[in-house]
Image (cartoon, rainbow, N blue to C red; front, side, top):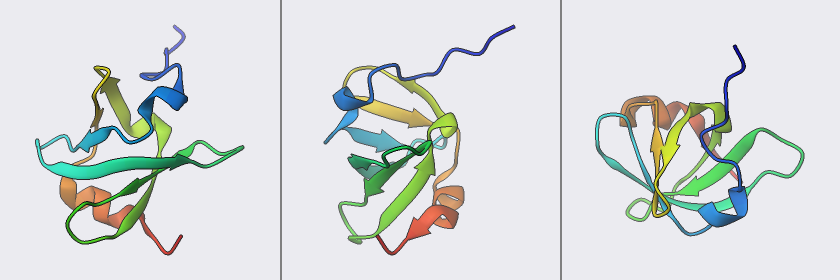
Length: 81
């Protein structure tokens, strides 16, 4: 069985909200890493950035990405970009 990606058109996710599996607001999508399977999320409160694998996205409803990661797990993807 082939697994379909949760997001087909990543250009539509720019400046959209990101929510963790446990329902917490993570931030907004600010970039897609070219040639990579990651996207960059910037938190709105702490001004931190996270490089999250695209396969950790469970869904996209047009306004918000839903992750398969809890907020605590998202912290493990912190970056200095």
